[in-house]
Image (cartoon, rainbow, N blue to C red; front, side, top):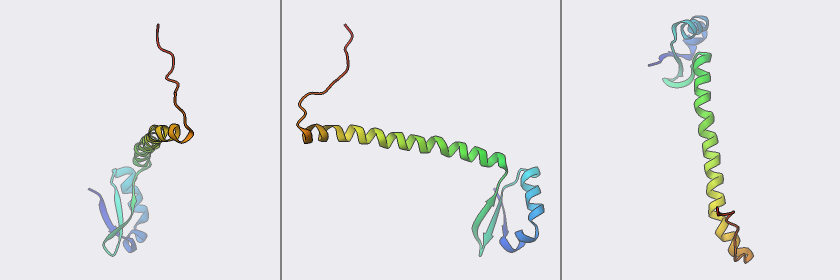
Length: 92
């Protein structure tokens, strides 16, 4: 669970909050009117979050590309009147 603090108090205690994050391993959520505004996390936590995001983005892109290729092939053959397709070489 993260430590929550209002933005007005966070301004006055920024150095202390940074120490809590870096040395205490805490996560601090700065709030405005009781709603989360920003979070202070360690650089190590940020790297882990970035590493989690990267593969997911790449997977989505490759999935969308694959779906587009498969879905468009039959329509393209019909559109251009292509009756045959290359299936690669078969082992002898």
